Length: 67
Image (spheres, rainbow, N blue to C red):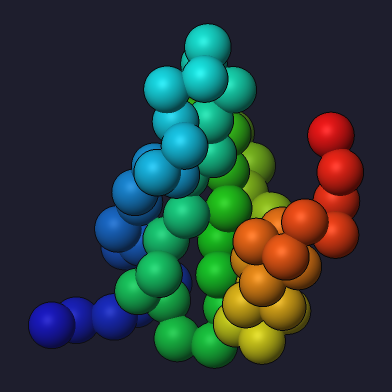
């Protein structure tokens, strides 16, 4: 498996069936986690450190960001 920053493999959030408000994440880029809007695949992506992304996901799962 090749892991390079110029060929990220994007996948949609498992919560994507919510009216089009979806994100895509690429988990095959060493050291960073790129995140983009699924409606704009050629637009910009935000990048997070792997640790920062895992911390964010854990906080969401723990309910630390109420709706």
